[in-house]
Image (cartoon, rainbow, N blue to C red; front, side, top):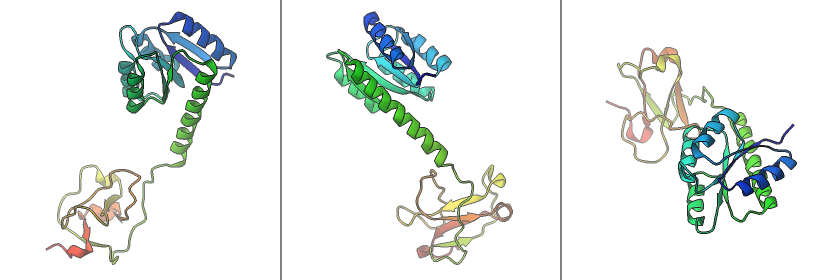
Length: 217
């Protein structure tokens, strides 16, 4: 079984042959192309784990290919290969999301070392995604909590909320105004939450505000 599939995107035939032979000997499955648009097709069809991407190519340059791969949300790490004079572009591509860059002329063992790091990083990301599921329910604070006060209002609930538990959250600091409902932006928010179950929320639209403002009138 191979160690993973590598896609080489470069128009230097000698370089591609050398890299392909070396990586095949190391146990990788290797595909290659000199055309940017074909590279995007291969990303979709063969699902490489790593792309070795040259900066300058016919049809599409490396930056355009990198952006297109990111737009596809492909599960792949991109390693940029840059010749003399293109280092600034390669560095720019790492800021855009490429894993790393290599300067030509390449060291085969240097390429292998970076590929291994990219694969290890990819594997860690996969494990992190599995170990951090999004919870559908958070711990409810008691109604008499000093951090929150709840008031009911005869308003219709937000669209789609009847199929879920309604969660309002109020941070301990930041720009807040009385009675403003604050929704958590993502699963990494660290401030406490108040939770209202669906059955209750079908009757009332709860607003949460910080105790320092008192109850709504």
